[in-house]
Image (tube, rainbow, N blue to C red):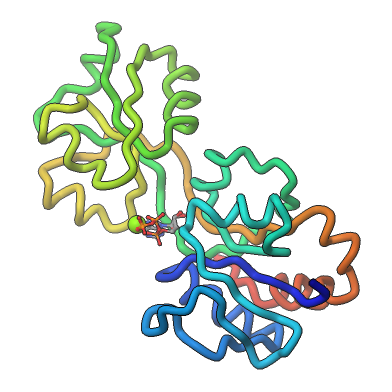
Amino acid sequence: MNGITIALSKGRIFDETLPLLAAAGIVPVENPETSRKLIIGTNRPDVRVVIVRATDVPTYVQYGAADLGVAGKDVLIEHGGEGLYQPLDLNIAKCRMMVAVPEGFDYERAVRQGNRLKVASKYIKTAREHFAAKGVHVDLIKLYGSMELAPLAGLADAIVDLVSTGGTLKANKLVAVEDIMGISSRLVVNQAALKLKRETLTPILDAFAKAVKKD
Ligand code: ATP
Ligand code: MG
């Protein structure tokens, strides 16, 4: 494949990447929200977009099925980043990785007493590293979605999840008790593609870098 394939997930990452693509002169011809197509052409015959699950973006780029992609720091930490060059923080899809517990659960006290905590999360690696650094003993329970339910249903004492407005936590009577890290999405590039397709990729990476909004 001589052209360029870009892996994106639909929803906020696709939407927030559109202006950056436009700055590089790339305009997808369809919207994945309304089209069922998983391969979307662009105004440029040599550039196409593949629509994959957010957690699958690093995998497509790692194996070279996509030359570049956009993935959240949350997803990149769990993936490990092998085979990926991460040249740019795009400062989009921003939120925070936090520990949350049910209202009324005395988290500080549980930690002070050295209690073993049951923690449910989609982000096992992030959670493991966070609690290990604090010296808190945890049993980690891997989930794939709706983490907020876990403490309510009695599956876990706490969750590690992404928070933006806090609305979902509040609606489920949970409170954030620890801020683990800020999250934004990064550009990821296949390391071999960067060498083999440098002439095509460099102008795109440069245009992205210039269009990134600083805060
Ligand atoms: P799905 O919702 O289909 O299960 P997902 O949760 O992995 O998949 P998105 O919700 O589109 O996919 O999230 C994609 C990325 O956007 C996440 O990896 C994260 O970096 C970021 N993100 C997630 N939730 C928020 C949020 N509430 N506000 C801002 N950015 C977020
Ligand atoms: Mg989601």
